[in-house]
Length: 252
Image (cartoon, rainbow, N blue to C red; front, side):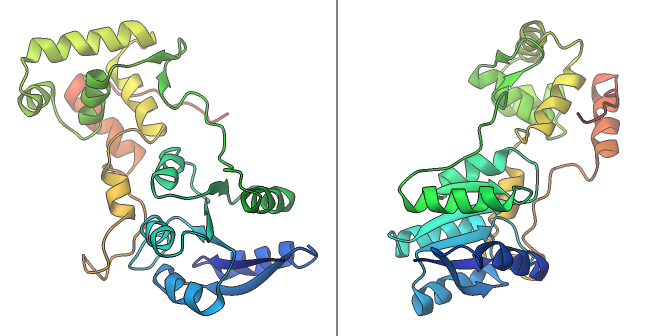
């Protein structure tokens, strides 16, 4: 029997997961937690085989941080991270935190059961992400320096500020931007920056927000945030800084 601890701040999701697992003869929910910071105590009390936990919850401690703690303190317990957010960076953060597997909340009940069983069998189940580290129609790879410049563009820095931050000449920044556009076949840095933002590669700021310590800003929930308040905000910055705004694309 696989005993599971469910950790999520959405009661309706906890109830839904219980209903998914109830018919399974080899899986049982031993306990649920609505707060990430209670997961460690629950593991001590119930000794689950596996923890299925949301990445970002409206509590003082994120699932990412708790995952690290659980793997350090209870290395035998499997941890599967889940999220309903589409930002691709979450998969990498879950891996870095030591998660055994990762699943999106919109997955089917069968997919949840399969993920849990395979994880308990020793597999690491993570979604296959195509194109996260490549850009443009050409699916071009960028150098470390080019990615660094692209991240700074997405953090509202101008070309002059980027040059100062990196200790290089502005013409060198321009050279790298031109090289990125040529490789990716983007017509402007605006389109490339939007693609980077959509892939969650803009900066580490979102991860830092999601990993905020319990003692830091205790009244603010640990939910992910990007540097920009909205897509419109991002577009306004790009138009002001680079002279063009991104075109609106419908999601496939």
